[in-house]
Amino acid sequence: MVAISEVRAANAALKGSRHALTAVFVGATNGIGLATLQAFAKHVPRPRAIIVGRSQAKFAPQLETLKQLNPNGDFTFLEADISLIKDIDTVCQTTLTRLGDATKIDILFTSQGYISFVGRETNADGLDNSISLRYYGRMRFAQNLLAHLSPRGRVISVLAGGKEGKIIEDDLDLERNYSIPQSAAQFASMTTLSFDHLAVQNPDISFIHVYPGLVSTGLLGRSATGVLGYVFRYVLEPILGLFSLKAEESGERMLYCGASEQYAKGSWSLDWDGAAKEEKVLKEYREKGWAERVWEHNQRMFERALAK
Ligand SMILES: NC(=O)c1ccc[n+]([C@@H]2O[C@H](COP(=O)([O-])OP(=O)(O)OC[C@H]3O[C@@H](n4cnc5c(N)ncnc54)[C@H](OP(=O)(O)O)[C@@H]3O)[C@@H](O)[C@H]2O)c1
Image (cartoon, rainbow, N blue to C red):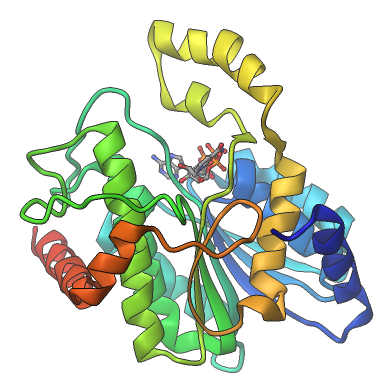
């Protein structure tokens, strides 16, 4: 476990360094992503961030806050629909054009997503939309931007590191077996296994799949509609809030994952407190070569999506 005092001290020490870091944030218009972006702006002396989200107008006040947090910062918002693979490809191209050839990406931080309480919602790519945001889209961002990461760069997915579970092996995209618990277990495993594959191919880069713990962000209330949404917003979330991490602390912890030497290189499955984990079931998948199989599956899903 990394104590929060250690996290805060390490982040504060970034100020004293000559750090000019460049990051791409996807899903940082709210919650854990936004808190991490704010910590990045606060602690990094010369931060440069490309922020990919679906509404520039909605993000305008936050953009102002970022500039106030660090007047030396360079913050660019790119408006895009990030649920479809072809649109992710386009916004990745725009990101690279904006950064220019000379700039490398130090951190790719992905935390976009919601939980579907209405069952599988197949999108135009033929994938469940919530899974696409939490998993396939993040892998596509990683794949597209990988060659433009700095040596010792990091790819971070905020999801469920250490919560890997059983995969339905003949239904990897859960076309026939969608449920909230199964999608949680399956894509936790598939995220870590994809990162294992990428870490072998890219030994200088660090791939971090992290479970943030219970964090007060309003995720449940925003994900559900109708009576369920009301109950989540006004009953469940205030109760959970008593036991949850504040988004600010989570942002500090996530920045620590992105900047601490502790996580340089390799594939990491991290708990909320920064402790590395390996579930028994994950160990078995690793031994049976599932990292490659999962990555091949990703490629098939991308090709199918782009052919539609
Ligand atoms: N909070 C927790 O306790 C917790 C616990 C475990 C795991 N997680 C995981 O951590 C990740 C981040 O959670 P969070 O609490 O920070 O969530 P959040 O506050 O709801 O933020 C989610 C982000 O995803 C974006 N997003 C949602 N639906 C989208 C859509 N259809 N198209 C494009 N973008 C969309 C949101 O953009 P807009 O601003 O445009 O809506 C926002 O930037 C999620 O994958 C979540 O499952 C969270």
